Length: 365
Ligand code: SF4
Image (cartoon, rainbow, N blue to C red; front, side, top):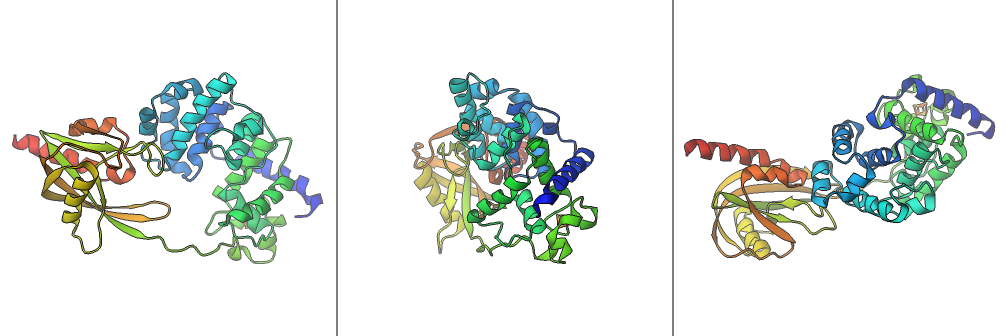
């Protein structure tokens, strides 16, 4: 990227964005809170998913005050199925801090904004540039891919240490007069044109300046270091019935799926059947003796670093009083009440079956 080309490239990108960007709800506002919510949701999640959650979340928590005042369970329920729940917990925490420290005004100062939970380099740059026109380049996966091809950058995009290299290029390229529009233009170019597979270079507004395209090397970029294959764990889960209610437990407030509710269960050990694992887990995790009535289903779910294969059993309470090992709370709930609690996606995959089982039971009387 030659210095003299930079002003031209900026102009081209901004004009391309103005004419071609997708109309998305979070682009129709300058409200910093709503822009913040959208950027947090868009981290790790695709636009087509976020578009289903964002309007509902904004209706439920229309402003920072509403979010700060909300119960964490309510926030997690609105986030249910979107994954990476630490994002929701941090956003909720951050909203409370903004109310307390800044009288409800989101700070447009980078240092201050970066001190809030869940706010890192990317979120701060994206929110401050889009909402307040502050001159910080937002470097996400899309932007790294565009830069990598455009400048033939050999640094692997999936290595944390490469971030500084991409950031340097972005610092040079950003249009400081229109930083928010420029950042969105780069992200949109990555999403619509310079896509991970089969980029449509012939429609690319900056094709003439792209090094990889000039050198016939587009397919060789971005560079990545090979990732290790992710492990798969087998898990047994029990839906324990007692007096027409089922047992659900609440996870610890922090860590993976923190604060969500789930059906108790755990990993199947070597040489153990799913049934005996289920019985053992009920003893260890909730101190209950149970009997297995029937097999409900098998569900698969993938997290970032591992996959799980879950066998779900319908169980009957036999004896014992609930004593929690890892969980922090529990409830005996009717199936129709399950919807009031936030559950992880892996559980949401079989909950509809429980409704069906209930329906059949009720029919039989
Ligand atoms: S010309 Fe092709 S590779 Fe280069 S930035 Fe545009 S879409 Fe990406």
